[in-house]
Length: 251
Image 1 (tube, rainbow, N blue to C red):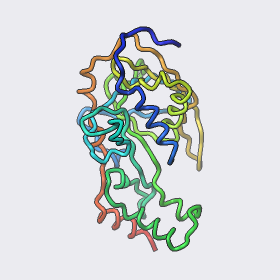
Image 2: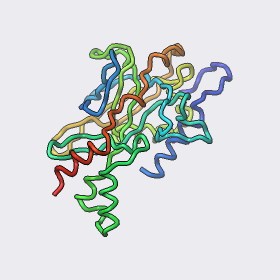
Image 3: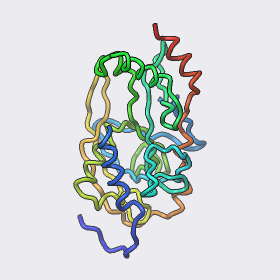
Image 4: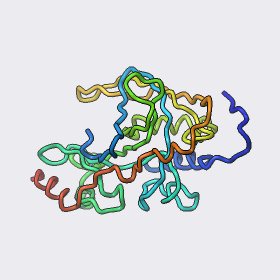
């Protein structure tokens, strides 16, 4: 597919998305989310196909994990298309999911304990150590298109890096023309096909294909005003709370 002429405006996403994707390659429920009033979650399902417009939001967190001052990526006041964060799973006796405070530049007792074990000679590949490592996830603002179960309004999509963003990065590496996909004026609708996989007896959806479809008309810039601030959605427990939950179930 070739891009039809839409003038010579330079998209703010040109160069930024592929740079961030390369940077990611270098280092690889809702109890953890506080949804804004009137905003619902979008949830991917196995063996389905969906069309999504990913809508950028205005960054407010100075500790945004994607921040790159040199290229003005994810700096406060600028728009960006995703909110990465880290999550500890199965913490404490109640097996809680906890957003790692390092996601917002704060100390994390669980990460500190893991580092202590490594410093004392534990193997990073031991199950007890691996269980303490947080997993990388991303939040997106999406508008589902033509979906029978979702209105065509902004939703929040919460999905692991492994199940979506890695596949998206690979597609952009193959064709950098698609990196402007989040741009309201010059972007693309993503048509995503989800396969079904299973792990530990649980079935889940994973991306098997992403197509980039040129929009019939640009999105109105006002759509950004409707996008919830993803930096304010995460529920970050205090270090003291995490210590009570975590160390209450250790030893």
